[in-house]
Image (cartoon, rainbow, N blue to C red; front, side, top):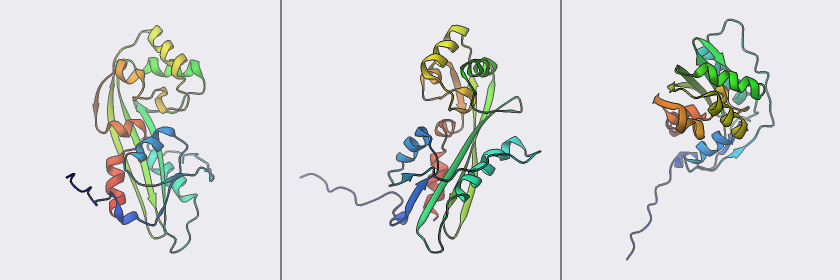
Length: 202
């Protein structure tokens, strides 16, 4: 006779909540799916992502994640959770955003060769009664690729929607990433372990 299925459900404390992921990123959607909780994606509320002058690079992701989550209305007593996130890549103290076009993606990837970059994701979890914001950092060691390999990646994967011009879960992650210190999922765009812990406390 088969053993009965476990009655355990992850994050049962969130039962009855409308959980909203305020991000159009397919990678964040995929990562949040790993937590086995129902959620929906809503990008209806855009924000001005201008960063205050003089803000330290390390503080930018948390600041932007808070802006994104705060843009969504939550009525008093409403059982809604909004999750906002933002990821940046820092190389030699400078922030690498998303490339504006394919040539800029090539230049960005060339600048990463043989160096270690910092990938920081800020996350904000917001309900009617509380707001939690945190950041997670991973250090990524980038190997060396030939110009032809960089061109291949850029032309095939067209990483224009990715900070630092690459997705670690794609071909380039296998071909060029020699080491990671910190969360792999954080480099993809969402530190799901930290998020899981935060959601358990709601």
